Image (cartoon, rainbow, N blue to C red; front, side, top):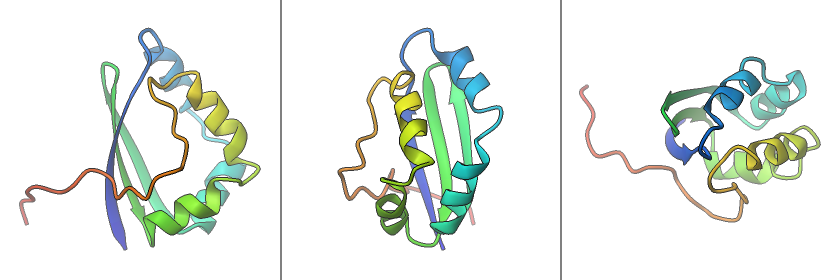
Length: 103
C-alpha cells in the first residue's frame, strides 16, 4: 500500500464551489477509484491550497487506469474549471516527497 501526498491549488474565488462539489462524490467515480486500488482519499483545504492524502495499491497504475474512465472524464472537466492548474494525467509523478514522519 502506498500513501501519496498531493498538492493542488484552486482558482481565486472557487473555494466554496470546490467544497460544494466535493460534498458528494459521484458513486461511479467512487467505484472507479476503488476498482483502481484506492482505499482512501482525503483532501484538506487552506484557503486556495489543497492537500490530498491518497492510500492506494499502486499510484501510477491507478492514474493510468482512471484517466479514460467514463466516470473520471466529466469529473476532471469539472475540476479543470476550479483548479489553477488542470491535471492532465501525463506525468509519472509520485506526489510530494516525504521529508519527515513521527513514528
